[in-house]
Image (tube, rainbow, N blue to C red; front, side):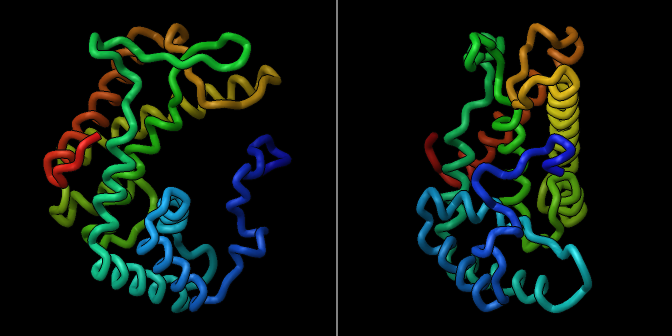
Length: 224
């Protein structure tokens, strides 16, 4: 992937790192530590590693780790408000007047961070999956499973899936274009380059993120 232009993780969260080549007992201890410590670094690790899945074989490793994770979460319910707080801390890139809120990158380029927006949809789906004991990984699969289990309203799941697909398409198209032009790949989308239809759809996706945040804020009573 690195040779093809998809660079190595800057945070070194990769299977090639010795730290992440562990036996089941060590992974169980790590998961428990991240859930109980809930420091910013621990929360970030939890977000990454709680999306684990089997890459080879159907052995006992993944089911055993799922069982341990669910047990730890049941014993430490305060983890969920901490995860919700991290989701509410993010503000979708829309101003109060409905225009895009832009940030500036090196070289004077302006745009919005599409990766940050997508991360909130991923986090909400992960949160709901952890709450409901849904073991599938992947945002779209989780949203479908949550709706089928009656844990999320079907319309809400459909709107979230639609928003995720739209933002993913924008992100990949943007990155492929920059790669094709021999430019550094990033996640800064210039709204001036979006068609009127894509502009409308993107704003609707950001509004869906806000709606999900409002549901969480009402449910958990957590302030931004």
